Image (cartoon, rainbow, N blue to C red; front, side, top):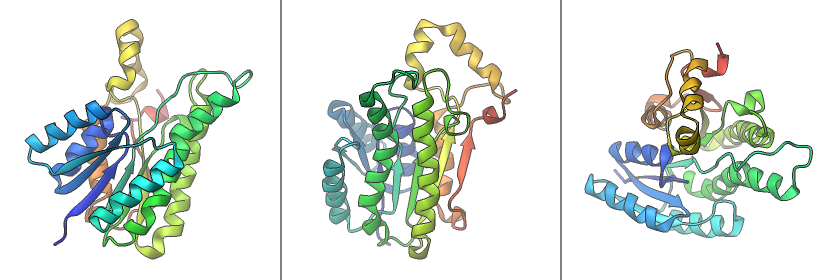
Amino acid sequence: MSKKIALITGATGGIGFQVAKRLGQDGYTLVLNGIEDEQGAQRIAELKEAGIEAEYVGFDVTDDVAVTENVTAIGEKYGKLDVVVNNAGGLGGRSPIEGMTTEFFRFVMALNFDSAFFVSRAAIPFLKKSENGSIINFTSNAAWNAGGPGAGIYGTSKGAVHTLTRALAKELAPAGIRVNAVSPGTIDTPFHAQIKATKPEVFASWKDSIMLGRLGQPEEVASVISFLVSQDASFITAETIQIGGGQALGI
């Protein structure tokens, strides 16, 4: 049996690295992407120490030329891709739409939507060579509720990812490639480090809006992705799985 190959973007920290660790434990050979090369090297050392075969490839997922060149090189090196996890993204900052600069608008859309589009587009020819090809995108509660104050464009970008997921699922179903998304709620990661450090009472209050009464852990997102890319989920495509302890319903 040939090795299973997984490419995870934004994989040097937070949820992305936990996803990488879990897929590595599941037997995948990993390609971690990021833009912090030193951290990437540290993560690869951690994975190899755990007996996981992995490499780091640094490139900016918002740069279509860099994405195409690097993803093509990765696909050609391994002969295929079995899993692509479009984890790279982020809030990018906050700004009301009135007065928002075009540069900020383009930055947030590129960070969340363009990145998933560019990577998926480049990966498709190599996913077609897999017997169980799968793409996982990351959306957000903000795709449904349009985000908090100043995060309207973040929500818009994640709404676009939700629709892209379904569009790709439609297009790629004849090739046997499944495309799904996860929508994490508030997960306890470095993403929230600033508010955790400066406003601990606000951070602590977030659990009050979660039905299960606690924040999520990165490993809980990784376990869902592990399932979605496995044969156990072979009849699931075009779905977005909420991983938020009931947070999307509000209480």
